Length: 294
Ligand SMILES: C[S@@+](CC[C@H](N)C(=O)[O-])C[C@H]1O[C@@H](n2cnc3c(N)ncnc32)[C@H](O)[C@@H]1O
Image (cartoon, rainbow, N blue to C red; front, side, top):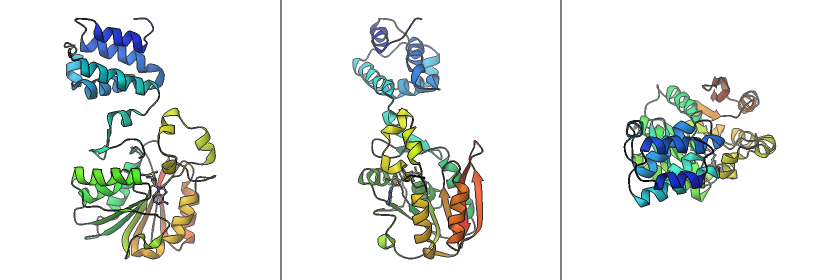
């Protein structure tokens, strides 16, 4: 097969007798310049647009003779070639084994964030009916997962962006969570009442330099979810001063942090009077989570 273009792909889909496997091979080739995982992405797009499974593609069955499905596949493919994230095109993405709705205005849940989730679940394993506060809730991937993994917990999640908050509420309902979602500012203490056994946050943490070097896909995600001011540490600085008084004695403070931020963030938590500062690496060995106890 020679060069593949969207036009050539469209013509292939129109050809009588074309198989799913042929469509997948062509799509893979078309996507190769924009992704490191063309095979995975081709199968995901085919499955989403045409309602076929991976095994149906491999068995090389006939391509559905459905005009609407063809148009949908072409539209999704065009969006992906414009570097829109696959996750936004599919409209849902898994976090901790559950599908979360995602789209414009909300950060896509990342696998690295599962390390924060695991750390918090482990840290709360001895606490019965914990009160938990998540700051900067986004899609709700952390708060909703926590609420489902620990049905005895009272989970609050604060999110400032209206678009992201709408996803938080939608995901909580769709997955059957019991999160108290709050549209509010993480820098305002009055946003929620009482003390907590755990306060966690995955705040925006990219620096000005990171923002200048973004992959095209990241530019589709809201700046408000990414940018942590010049050095990326703005949220950690303010949240670490503000919230420790609202942690119960023995309570757990837990952050996800960006590359090379763990030491600086640990120092902020120590300065705030917290103890037992701990760093946990992600699956690539980068220190990704910083925790402390009161
Ligand atoms: C890095 S995202 C994390 C989203 C989600 N918790 C996750 O782990 O995928 C940070 C979130 O903080 C929100 N945010 C930014 N400034 C905020 C503020 N002052 N108060 C509350 N939320 C804020 C953004 O809209 C975004 O949804």
